[in-house]
Length: 109
Length: 218
Image (cartoon, rainbow over all chains, first blue to last red; front, side, top):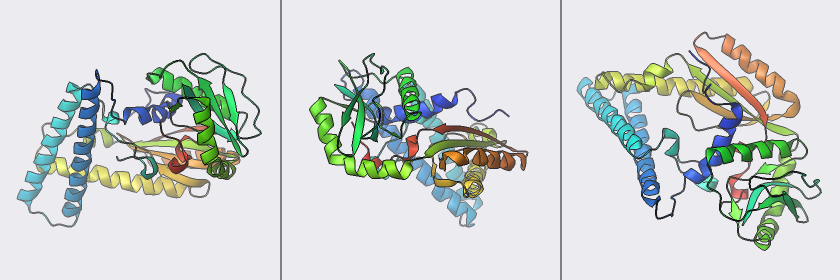
């Protein structure tokens, strides 16, 4: 197993934080506005996906799901994750692009 | 357009270097704080290379003065707009500068052996297997954050969980004198478990600990 994120230097990783602020905004440039809007929509979908996943894990931990429910919910989340990856690829986005800087409230994801 | 780099004490020495746009960095001083800025002819594209150079400049500036880095690429239209922002925020900025004096940011990244399989399990598995793997990953992540936070508790004034795709990434606010001890503590923690890998970087300027309420947004 490799050291975490070893493809990037520490400075590059710090620089990510400074760059993310821009990429979290919807770009109003007419040539790139579509990508900006897709980025925003996918970020919100990713938020919902993560919330659903956390809720499913909580129910799993609590023993509140039957085996059939576990399979059905797990498959739904799995397919959603796959679909999200496809959409990110289609629009040239990375997982790191799916976030929003909410200023005083911090990052959405 | 004025590109903003960071907030420094009002009596800080003016930097003698050029910025991203090739212009000399300037200081716009208030009574309590000052802003380091650069005049730019146009809005920056904010590429990865520019962000890296921006981070390098902030790191360089931090070697000579306390600094609150400003989110890249924050720009204001004129010097007078910069002065107005400074006047409106300098009391809060000065407070935060004082709080952060002598402190640095250290970033800890931790990853564990199961992470790759847990995150890459979407294909060729049942829904139950997928959900069980995700649950294991989430539990492992929660436990790792709690463990590392406990490990660094003696030295870190503040700990922030940073965005991550794999493993855990934490930013710790540490006194400059304690950086080595924190690093050693994390190394010891890593060695205690064969399935974990960590990387510690820093000390850095306090990128993650500038209170957003006191920071400018573009």
